[in-house]
Image 1: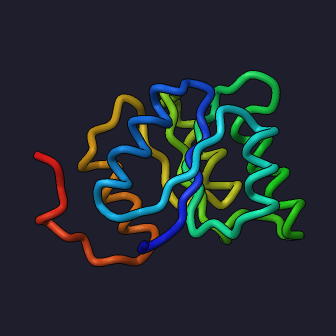
Image 2 (image 1 turned 120 degrees about the horizontal axis):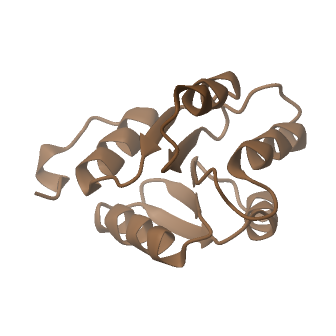
Image 3 (image 1 turned 120 degrees about the vertical axis):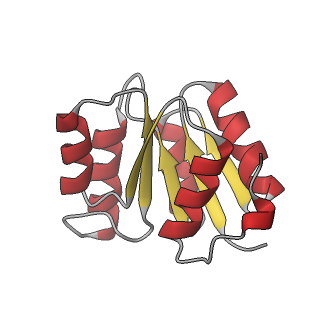
Length: 134
């Protein structure tokens, strides 16, 4: 396996799609449907990257990112890097994600190409054109 990723979204269809796309190109992907599941997993497993929705019931993605930073004792999240994936496309949300230290922000709906390219870019991998879904 290349890298181990955690996909967090309260919509099981979204995490299933993310998992399917990313595992098809060699990543190991765990999924969580809420902040509680995500925190349990992240405290047991060292992830290389976290993909996270913003709008979730209970603890939203921004708040969860703040909890992750408290867990590791930093002001901003950079390890593991976080990619927010959200239907929210307002500039203030994108700026808030940047202030939290997010590595990237993908707006839903996304294509497999955007997802793969963004993940590869954040992980510092060379983008493999042969692996991109057409």
